[in-house]
Length: 185
Image (cartoon, rainbow, N blue to C red; front, side):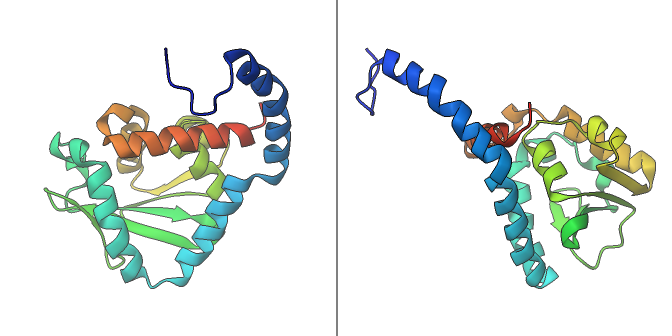
């Protein structure tokens, strides 16, 4: 028998899910707490010096994408730069690759700029929308070296959650669930 930390029967849990979940979804679709939290966080980030942002982001990216880096999936980015920009928050991170690790350096000159607003990035990260859909809805744009931008887009399309460390998979699953409550379905 599985351990149930709530002590509630399956019937009670099912009834709660049936009655409470729609109400929670209605409120979250209106309030959009995850989108607001991400927007607020991006406001805080935009107040930090770009060098501090880069020092914090580089190890996070290298940890989360270690398997892809090791497999050579970022080789196309070697000695090049892709800027990821958040249009509605005036943020941009210039990301390069030195052959062994991803670099985040505001001094790198971008070959391509991929930009979107906070809600579009949340949908992309949580896999509620794919890059092509966002691109054709004009919520995601690619400027500059289009071939390189397509390589980045294809990498995002091919990103398999199994390539991420366990802690990142759990975080992505939680984010996907929370954003699912906000989504207008």
